[in-house]
Image (cartoon, rainbow over all chains, first blue to last red; front, side, top):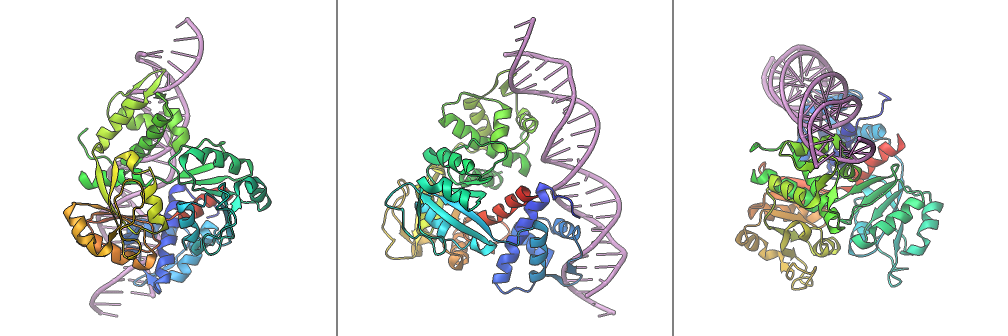
Length: 208
Length: 208
DNA sequence: TAGATTGTTAATCGATTAACAATC
DNA sequence: TAGATTGTTAATCGATTAACAATC
């Protein structure tokens, strides 16, 4: 099974990883496909099917060991190391991201935070992300640290500019928290988060 | 076509809505399936297929009118009215959400913001969301205003408590921005946002 | 043993894509 | 007319699900 995963499988495995990480924090040692299903809304049969493609990780009548399944999925997704990311924007959203445990929990390290407001430069936001750097230094720092992931937490009006700078410096994956549409070269992936659109989608099924 | 949409179709239509909303803001009047495809990474044929199930909205050789397509999709998704939501947590993340234009742009109104810190109560966060209310009043306010959507922007440790209060007051859709797993009754939908997990997924395809 | 849950099969359904005629 | 883009067909592939034997 050295084959490349399909998008669907990789995306579901990531969801399982999230559930397992939390289950472990809550002190759970075993978990069944049905329990994972309750938290992810992914069918329990599909979960067992996804996992059994890579090995027999479970025990019949018992379930899966949280710890060992966590390890197996990390192996499959090859996400065992540390990953460095750059955060652009040290406003309220940037601060919320920098101080959230959500990235650190998965081995993701905010290696640099940038802002173009001189009043923000030098401040310490978050607990583990260094002090805010001037946006003018973005290209040099991102290039020097070989960062390939950037998070955009600036207003829509400056989002494209920030994107261009990141892309120029070698970034290949962009998480866009502004509502702007971003133009990027074909070898760069953009993930846009838009809770409002997700909400409309959820409402459709609630109302129907 | 009074049938209920499949989850896939509804989710893709929501993405088109997001692109069209931005395209309109940028002053675009026409858009082709290929352009929508570039922004969403959804195959252009699939986009035309999704739309043609509901009518002939495009003009061959020309494309789609941004304005009329926006209207058609809103009709299909039945999201033309105003929707009220409750926001729990007025910290950095709550403030970022309340001051973002992302919800207002889609007709979603933050009808109430709650926090249990007495220092936050009474403050004005965001431009259009009233002042912060004491969490003690959550149940009454949410019930009175018939709010069915709640956004959790509190630390993981208080997320379940906030969820229970929302559910008790009649909320049926929860957007969870904490990393906690939430237990809810079966008729309540939880959408958990976890950028770290999405990032691991994106990295897999970058590295493979 | 009895109960629970995995791993797997088989059948169905929706998503995806290429190709192309229709037509603006 | 020439070029562009839709709407639609047909073929393929992966996702989903029920069912159940295997087995802890």
